[in-house]
Length: 491
Image (tube, rainbow, N blue to C red):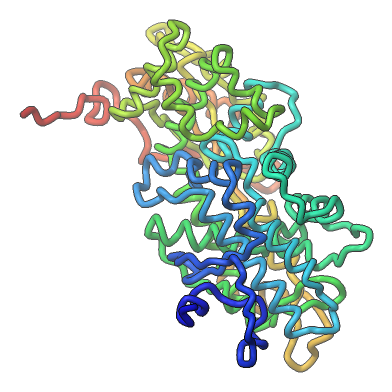
């Protein structure tokens, strides 16, 4: 046997290498990841990765419709899940080495790693577009989330590929790790649930990977370092806590997440294309039965971003309108952004959609306006630091090198005085399916907003809160450059 080939494959027990005469080779392999470098894929990981159910993730864009705006965002759920699994294993093994008293077993490390690997198995076409926008409209009242889909697909993967190395207790544990919990789970160590899907404060390896990976691919610079967080963590009172010197690093992570949502995930053009894809899938659903796949893992296995190609290849007359929408995306004849308003917290009730909706905007047309409810699209964009209106740092616990077994919270004034006053914003955005009516719709919407402002009661000694239109977004009367057709080169 070539001794060099043995080193390339690796050994099950490196400690026995020196005197071994009959070396047992494992089936692990390595990949080179642009974010984490070389990642070892264990045999347990490979038996899941090398299945049709997991390979499906190669055809799901991590950033959904943002890829249409940010060409670098072409990465998929496949590599994100592998990166998350790698970090989950690193965190669990690091805690086991630094705190042997935790009695973290090989089974714990294995299940946490596999939970990281499988946590996004259930994402549908264009990621969150499917479960947040399409399913609520295609199947009103249906209880569905991509986490539920991940559990469904995990069972399907295990059954279809006859994986017998996971018993029922392991599968139940992995499912719970994917779902996340802040409540005690019988027989399991609670701090392990902080690793993949942390419901206490959102500091988990899923976020570590996607924030770093998305920043890398779209060219957004970030200064936070997740590797320092992992090295400076320890378990106190069944909760993962962080060295107090990492408080600002954590603040940077939460700010980077907010920045990605503000600048990338909620980009106006990406949202306009999202509306078009949802409309196309809704038109196609009675024929292609897209929404029915959420209860059928065999059908869900083939449901990916390629659904738009299924629509394009279709010949049914009923899908002509859907094909037209996809064709419009290709030539950048998209739905258009009309206006947006940042809602003051006191007027957040307007974000429910019951106050500002398409019908309300139509109610403020003038006799010369000809737009209808179908032309108007309303989007309520909620962007925060990860814990609603709370400062997420308030939910994190820290320790000091002088007292490594005592956890405590840190007030934001002790981290920096240059911190936000608020940690969540709601943005009311208006779009149109008919670009030529943008000006009409904006003027009608602003008349509606003006009426709402005048109806807000004022408090003694203060002015009432109001929604202020952005002057820079005001569409002038008459045709604009944006409304004119783009020049095309002819050869």
